[in-house]
Length: 328
Image (cartoon, rainbow, N blue to C red; front, side):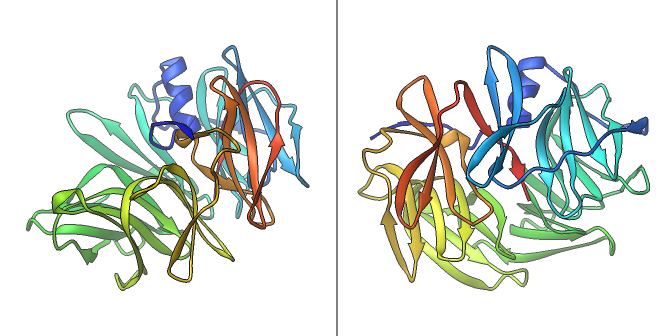
C-alpha cells in the first residue's frame, strides 16, 4: 500500500496557508444564520474554492453558504468558519470577527463552545484564550512551556497539554480556567510526547523513549494509566468508537494503514483497498460511529471511505480535495 506521509492536516490551517490570513480576536459581531452539520462532514476544495458538505444518512449533501466551516462544536452548534478569506466565530447566532495582526495556530473551541483557544507566534508560541460569552481574554498563569501545539480541551473549562514546567518536570498538565489552577497529571519517566488528544473522557498521547521506542498511552484526568499499545512506529490520528480504538499510522513490522485496537490486540483493516490512505487528513466518524478516512486508488483522486463492521467501502467520490471538519 502507498501512503502520503504527513501529520493530520487541519482544514483551518490549510486555509490560513492559502490565504495568508492573520488571526486574533475582537468584539465586532453581527447576526448570522446558524448552520447545523453532522459528524463526518467535509469541505471539498476545487481550484481554490471550497464548499461544505454535510453527511446525512450516509450521503454528502452540499450546504448553501458563502463561508466554510472549519471547526464545529455539536453541544452548542457554535463553530469557527472562514468567509472571503477572513476567519470568524459563530457564537449563539452572532458572528464574532477574528482580526488581529498576528498569524494564529491551532484554534480550538471548548466543549460547549464558550471558549476559544489558539496560539500567536512571536519568538515562541503564545497561548491565548478568550471567553466568548463575556467577550474578553483570560489570563493564563501557567508555569509550563507547552511543546509545540500539543494541547486540547479536556472539558468545558479545562485545557490539557504536554510540556515542561519551571521545576523541569516533564509531563502532561491540566489547566482549569474557572479555578485558575494548573497541575501535572502524568510525569514522563523519559523521552517526550509526539502526539496528544482528548479521547473518550481521557487523554491519549504518543511517548517516544530512548532507542526510538514509542508507546501509545491512555490516561484519565487523574493521570492513571488505563491502557497502552507498544511497538508503535508512527501515529497520525486516533478515534474511539463503542467497538474499539482506531488508529491511522504504522505499527512495527507492518505498513502505514488503518488499525483497530480492542481487547489488547491490534488488527490491520486496510491492505490494498484503497491503495492510498491520506494520513495527513486523519480520521472521522459518522453519526453511527463508523470510522471514516480519506484515500483513493490514484494519487490525485480522493474519496471518503467508511469502515463498517470491518468492511471498507466508498462513501463519496465527488471531485476535489477532501478535508474533514473538526467535530466535537
